Length: 78
Image: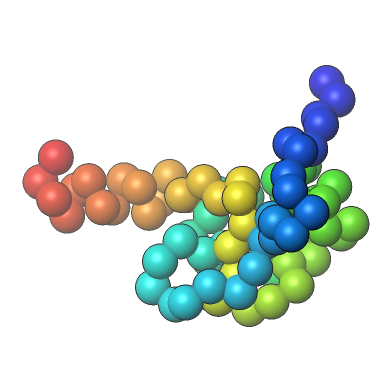
């Protein structure tokens, strides 16, 4: 299946440096080390390589990793 990038305004950054503690690549389902396997990110970025520290970088295609999602629910007693 072919993926198509969403259409963004010219000044929109799909990925960027973010403050530590919130959503970031280190918590993302698609991240393996310094690389991302999310096809739309790779197409936008031109490479699998994440262009910043994974705990300080995030993109529009972020999805929390199951290992983190499950832990948060367990910690909340759900």
